Length: 336
Image: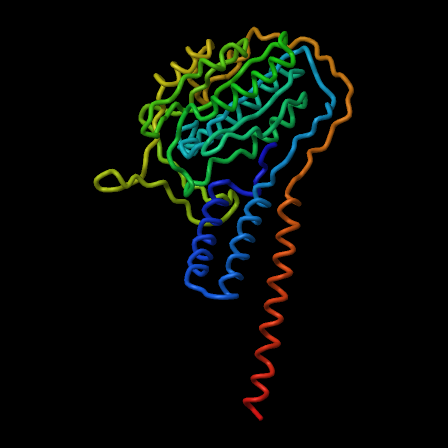
């Protein structure tokens, strides 16, 4: 079973926590039937959280599968530092990452591609596909994480996810050639040192670590989650400085070099004035064989929570109607 939440899990848990705290307080201070009603509301909040988390059993049937050729995995750092404006003529680093993904996918046309991003969460944006235009399209709409949700960046955030993903792919097709491109600035703002990328190395046959940013660094635009709004531009602030001012993000090439060494690939510092062609030089795409199959459908389990929630909601509605009917005769007697 997996979870496919309708929003970020921390947001859902925080919202449910606030509602549960209020309901628990009302339960404690209430008496009699009112107390029982608040107990039902506590259960409703828990059930709503279960629905919002969307527990799902993945499809077990195999869809069409591809083998042979080359699998290409892009792992992109979309933390707030990806909005630092030191790519080309003052553009955000993420713009350079988009351009490089597009160029590499074009160079390796015919391969299978997957796109993974990481910030507060690691997400596979595009599962393996032979459609290079799908990767280019997904990359073109990449945005940095919402600045207000940022809690610092860990450059190793995607290691566990990628290790699991690549190990499963290797177990299914052990002879398949796979390459990985890590795109980021190497800036670790969490207080803990980054973990090793070594667990990924046995499952890839090449790729590169692509570094974005400059030593002098640049300011980072605030991203509120609405890329096309007309709100005046603002920059992320550093409140630890004295006096506080615009935060500056700088590339950490030593950290990026360490990642490359642990993965067993080359590190390439990127700039808008240079081609990314050498990142894919020498790679053979090979021939791809596609096997037919019937894709299955995942099984949603939210209904397990929805049924008791519906019953509790009906009981709540009946209680409200009963309370209204009790009050109305009293009001008539008072006016008569």
